[in-house]
Image 1 (cartoon, one colour):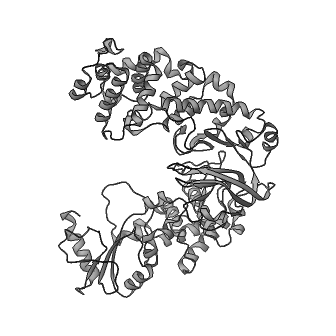
Image 2 (cartoon, rainbow, N blue to C red; image 1 turned 90 degrees about the vertical axis):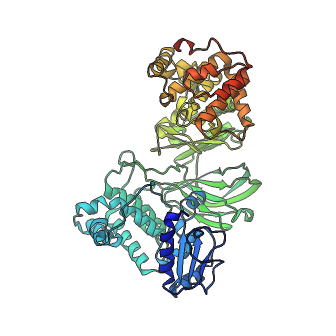
Length: 631
């Protein structure tokens, strides 16, 4: 704690103590008050304290502390919930986070949301109602607007986004024994029954604040409703009735590394459809989750073509679980890191079959039947990647084995350049969606693409003729490693090494055919522009930065890159700053090719320091490097 804040904490403790001059108890190993000048005792919670100071992250005797506060005791508790929420998928931060178990009953909650760092003006109490809008008052105005046609004031209209967020947070409390909670839930339910929820789609995007609010609130009211089935027809119209399978048995074999892994079931739930799953006892309360829906991007766009969030996660807390999703979706089990199981059985009581092809398991005859499965989403599981696309894209696919061969070759190429085993520790995933959180495509688990790009994943001949630059670019992102990444310069650069490599070495497509920026004249213009601009490192990014690597590749070949990547697999202690990392890269590449490349990198504007140059002095210099003509 800084000395500047010491008076603040002293005043806060004095206020909580209420002039009792009692014992201030501070949770052990908590140094918040160490420089405050206050007298306190390190102790676990005790009822004879005047004030108790603790973190929000630790388990505490909830009811005892609540009774302590109700009887006049002072409580100073602090922390944030965003990190907990991100690391506990499927759990409710309002009800499950340790600090909120204490605070909710006291009328406070720690949210999972964050705000940008900065200085914010404190609320002026006299202006609170006029300028800020109290939650209940604004909700009442919005209800009147929807159900009775009353006009919202200009100020109220601007606050609808905030109201939607507050409604969502409020509903997460699940406080059904509270009159205030059930009243708000009833008001929101009436609003939705009167207005319905916008039927968001590509053809019917949600744009205005009112529809944004109804869309977000509709999802949360459905989850909080005590009778969601009665509410469903007001939220989603025209849900198709699809044939189902019952008591479907699935055998699960998993061997995860250090990250979560989705396990496909080949089953789907329609919007609002509920099912029960019977799960093995040895995965209960072991950080397994059930996930409904493959599109996990959270959208923050002003214009939405689908709801902001369309998947649900349920922590596995019992051998028998009921699961559902307002938006429907494919059913997955999500295995935690470092988990090994073989042949465990899961039973799904009711679901819709999805077109699901798995290399080495699904025969040609099987596929002819499976491709007609009624679910709207299909999955193809190959050796090292799983593709999830609209079923209509693959209904007429005759040769999934040829698609498998294409993607097995691509993924082998990805592994070859990265110098990792051909069997990935976790299969990559690529999922299509009507709208994604960022870009044309984006990397991650899963890689996300737009649905209009889905068909090209299943056209091997076209892939070899025209390429799959974007898809391989994103898979390249997933291979980037901090040790040899110089963000932000190389973020959209080094991933393209995989695009070039896979197109030339796997697909047999020359780089200039794979992307227009790889045409020789365009490459030369890129370098010329950089040189004329003064070789400023701030301009060294994307295609300009890629040219540095391509010049190295043109002389030393792909084997040099493989050896460099292999060397980095053994480096655990690398610099954290770009300058240090660039010097290490220049040194590593030079040692790999047994040539002093410092002059080359300096010609590109890299900050090569004297110490690096001295280390490389014994090596013969690269005296005819491609940038020499610009020096």
